[in-house]
Structures are given as structure tokens and as C-alpha cells.
Length: 408
Ligand SMILES: Cc1cc2nc3c(=O)[nH]c(=O)nc-3n(C[C@H](O)[C@H](O)[C@H](O)COP(=O)(O)OP(=O)(O)OC[C@H]3O[C@@H](n4cnc5c(N)ncnc54)[C@H](O)[C@@H]3O)c2cc1C
Image 1 (cartoon, protein in one colour):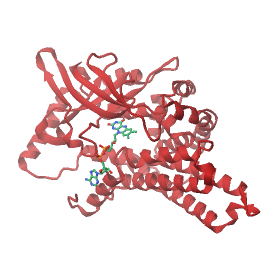
Image 2: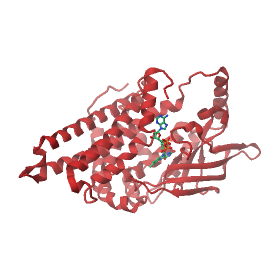
Image 3: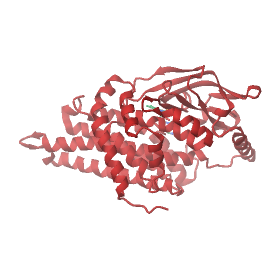
């Protein structure tokens, strides 16, 4: 087990500085343009692919860093650059992790390269779980996958929504119901290969923030995929369903499901994105407060401004520590007995919302315009309290974990 340390080692510092350079030189200068265009920043993704940031290898390297700090450090730097562009760069990772977590070696080898494409022809991937009537309440998912034994094919029907890269992805990973009796335990994930008939993009959403990241509905109309596209394979699914049915028969047994453990491990990464956005806004505010003069002195000379900055920085550092703790726990297989992963996401995302609002206040009228980046950062920050489980759901998970009670 890696010792917990608050100091990055030499290799991590090198990677951090390299990412920071990319965020400062390539991502940040492009942020306002792609926010206005509300389009996927393909040229920036391509740049990221060229230098090796947009690749499975890079994420795998960070993911397997034994200190657990590789991913949060990478997320913080990229999202410091710009949240919308960074999400376009890391969004494919969400689908890739779905395959890595549940797929066979053959599926990983076949599909993950197609998710990223190559530096001359970059591709993206989408992870489609949410539905119009199944957001926080994942168990009420309706998209159905039925096995056609004669053809060894799965037939998928339903409507997914809010899918990052939905419809523009080369590879879609779709979660669907295979046994409606079993609630969320009756779900399975499928690869929908490029060009599969029946999959189409529905509405593309015009959003409040992270506008450089494409978010859309995905319609699945009699989509047929080969049996080999069921992640993990049929045998494993049948075994898992049999176990779930057995447990359901015994009645009411509270099962700590594997999905919850996965969320605890993945949520700190979202917390780290929020820390990146919060830090970016704080830095702009600090710089502005020391240079902007009113009443013949820099505005930071006033405690009313200086104390805000002191609180902002304190909260950002506290958020980072919660994120690092949870990431270290995840990589070292520590049980999340107090839902520490959810805690880190909750605190960091609420901090990002608060800090970016304070940054607007410190910049006064300038903060409210698109001449300065903090209004964009504030719009972007609002997503962190919504996706990967809203703040209310994080509180629910934490409270249930602490109390052992089925709090509603
Ligand atoms: C930009 C963006 C990108 C996204 N990307 C993806 C993606 O790539 N793939 C994907 O599958 N999904 C994605 N999502 C979906 C996201 O995960 C959901 O929006 C989120 O889970 C919330 O679901 P909902 O929007 O249906 O809200 P709802 O679940 O309808 O919640 C509405 C409100 O009710 C509250 N609420 C609900 N239940 C409870 C409760 N039990 N107790 C207290 N409060 C409660 C919520 O906290 C929230 O405030 C994305 C969303 C957005 C906006």
C-alpha cells in the first residue's frame, strides 16, 4: 500500500507541469471561442492526441499510479484550463472505464482503440445511462435489451438523454434493462459499434455551461448488436442475474452493490475537475484584487475582499485534500465506510459553485462580462453539483452509509 503523502513525487510533478503547460497554452486560449460556438473542439482534442494526453495509455498510467494522485492531479490541471474543453478531452474516458470495468480482454482490445481513434483521425465515445425518466433514479431505467438467441444478437430499444458525446461518438456504451424484475441489478452494458443502424442522435442540448462539450439524446430504435457486444459476456451476465434472483427470493436483503463501490471510486475525479475550475477562478480573482484600485488603493487592501479570497483558497485546499484522500483510498482498496468518495465530490462541487460566484463579485462589473473568464467558470461550475450524482444524492449516500438507515 502506498503511503499517503501530500507531496507529489518528481515524476508526478513533471506530468503536472506538462499538463499545466498544455492547459495554459492550448486549452485556456481556446476556451472563450468554443464556449461561444457550443461545439466539440475537435482541433484541441487532436492537439491533445498529438502530445499524448488524449489516449487510453495516458489515463491508464495515471489510473494505476499507486498513490492515487495521478487522476485527480490530471483532472485538476485540464479543468483549470477550461471545463468544457477538458470534458471534451476526458469524456471518452467515461465510456472507456465502462469497458475496462466490465469488459473482457478481447472487448477492451477491440473497442477502446476505436473510442479514441488516432491523432490524424480522432474519435470520441459516449456512455449512455441516463434517461428522461431515469436520472437520479437509475433503477427506473426503461431502455430494454432482449436477446435473440437464434441470431446471437441483442435488440436494444429506448431513449437515452444527457449523453456526453451522444450521437457524435464512434462507439456508444449503452446501459439497458435485461431483467426488469431485478431493478438496477437487472441492467447490463452493451457496446454499440460505429455505424450501427437504429442508433441516432436526438436533441442536442443548448447548455448553461461546459458548452464546448456536446450533450445530446440518443435514440435506440431496434438496434441490433452481436452477442459479443454484451460487456463481460453472456455467461457472466447469466451468473450475475441468477445470484441477484436468489438474493431477491431471500427477500429484502440489503446488498451493497458493486456499482456503489465504483461510484465511490470515480466521484473523486469529478471533485478534482471542480477543484480545477475553482482554482482557476480564484487565481483570476486574486490577481484582479491586487491590481484593481478603488479609493486610491488595491481592492484587496479591504478586509471585505481579502477575507473572501482567504475563504476561497481555504475551501479549495480543503476540497483537494478530500479528493486526494478518497483517490488514495480507492487505489489502495480501502473501504469507503463514510462514503468518502461522495463526500469529496459533494464538497468540491459546492466549493466550485461558491468560489466562482465570489470571483465574479470580486471582479465587479468586469466579472459579469465575457471579457473576463470568471462568468464562464461560474456557468461551468454548476455542472459539478449535477452530473455523476447530484449534491442531494451525494448527501443521501453519505447519510445512508453513516447511519445504515434507508434514508429517503
Ligand atoms: C451536461 C451533462 C452531461 C451529462 N453527461 C452524462 C453522460 O455522459 N452519461 C449519462 O448517462 N448521464 C449524463 N448526465 C446525466 C446526469 O448524470 C443527470 O442529469 C443526473 O444524474 C441527474 O439526473 P436528472 O437530471 O434526471 O435529475 P433528477 O434526478 O430529476 O433530479 C432533479 C432534482 O431532484 C433532486 N432529487 C432527486 N431525487 C432525490 C432524492 N431522493 N432526494 C433528494 N433530492 C432528490 C436532485 O438532486 C435534483 O436536484 C449528464 C448531465 C448533464 C447536465
